[in-house]
Amino acid sequence: MTKSEIKSETAHSPRNRGTTSSSASARPARRAASAKTETPYHHGALREALLQAAERVLEREGLAGLTLRAVAREAGVSHAAPTHHFGDLTGLVSELAAIGFRQFNAAMVSACDAATTPLERTLARPKAYVAYAQAHPGMYGLMFRTERLDYSRPSLHEASEASFAGLANAIGAMRQEQISGDALTLDQGAAIARAWSMVHGFTTLLLDGRLKDILERLPKGTTAEQLLQAMLTSTVVPKLPGC
Amino acid sequence: MTKSEIKSETAHSPRNRGTTSSSASARPARRAASAKTETPYHHGALREALLQAAERVLEREGLAGLTLRAVAREAGVSHAAPTHHFGDLTGLVSELAAIGFRQFNAAMVSACDAATTPLERTLARPKAYVAYAQAHPGMYGLMFRTERLDYSRPSLHEASEASFAGLANAIGAMRQEQISGDALTLDQGAAIARAWSMVHGFTTLLLDGRLKDILERLPKGTTAEQLLQAMLTSTVVPKLPGC
DNA sequence: TCCCTATCTTTACATCGTAAAGATCAGATA
DNA sequence: TATCTGATCTTTACGATGTAAAGATAGGGA
Image (spheres, rainbow over the protein chains, first blue to last red):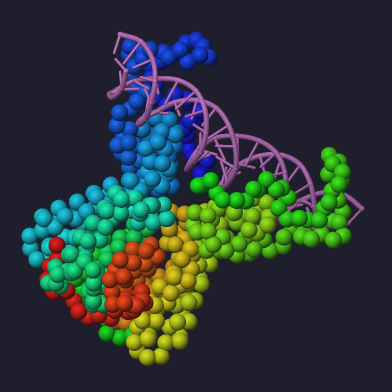
């Protein structure tokens, strides 16, 4: 889109494989793996390399810049190479999102482990949630942009499911209840939905720059993290109908 | 993307303007507005027609299907016609989002006006918020997908600003305070952020199908609206740290 | 009457996703 | 050891998209 900036792509032979095929013999001739092959025809671990390249592209150029061809360029292979490993763009993006969910879960678990005081234990998870999103805005945006993902992929389904389970358990712990996997009371469901909606909504609005107006009007120097904490801990409940 | 389904587009002359130019005289010849012109060369109100076409395309085929060419097809004009009115895709999409914000605000205002009991007055706005998103998922998704919008456009900036102002005022009313435009206490900011995050997060999760797991585990027949209400009214505050 | 200008259409081009066919190579099989 | 097979990667090709630029067509004033 938008005319793109550079990248001619007319340059064939993605990786300079040191072939230096001088003559243009139409016959394949099977050039016998010329002694100093810089990079072999077979990459060896292209799948992982592509996923890492994709993450770099995503965080560098944003969601719109995450294309199959850009990832292939970043990895130094031909533009059709990713297809073999991921089927299509949705496949690549879904695998990347699965990685994101695993990073995300790991961040929250380790934040919980590090918490010591009761207040820290209460805030560790939401703070880690927002912190991950701020540190990896591209990844977070990808993970919650359903239209580009394929949740029927086991890796993605599992990873996002684990994310939800962790949340539900944390809420259960707050309510000193064992949240059974199969049934919820309305109160339990409301508690889970409230916590998740609040943190997810805050994060989304923050990343979209929609909280800037609020932050600017707060006492000078107030950070998003402080706003989050105030939002989560303040017990002042509005008493009258709005509108 | 995805190979598309149909639409040949090889059919030139978007609208059948009844020209029936039999001979192929290379010279323009200025065919004198043949008596029964079905649709004139100049549409007359193409800008509005394009915006309406865009909304139809958006709700019918989703965000990914909302392309300049698809909108032009829907409106029956050449694929480059929208460019003249909106500059580029971002322009069209931003104007459409502005319309969305205006519809959205109107829906909340009228819901507030219709509320009578105190409980209704408290819930009218959030319920209208979610209801709009459910009725116009494409529009809602568009409005909060920042990466495709250009907030420097006055119409969009104003409309979304009005949306925020309405929210802030509603929170102010709940707290029986006058929320001054330029400064906020941390408590006030937290109250606004909490309300907005909660409702926006709930809506986003709901539209992305991520609350399905919760809804299925609630007492049989519980609707999203009931969950929202429980989420907003329940005063049971979690008492212990989580993790 | 003539021409200017906004509006709309054509044409063109770079990029994208994806399919299909060819090239390359590692390892099994004989 | 020589050959074959299948996985991996590259080429080539096609339709779709956004956007720029040039041509065609009126509507409305000079």
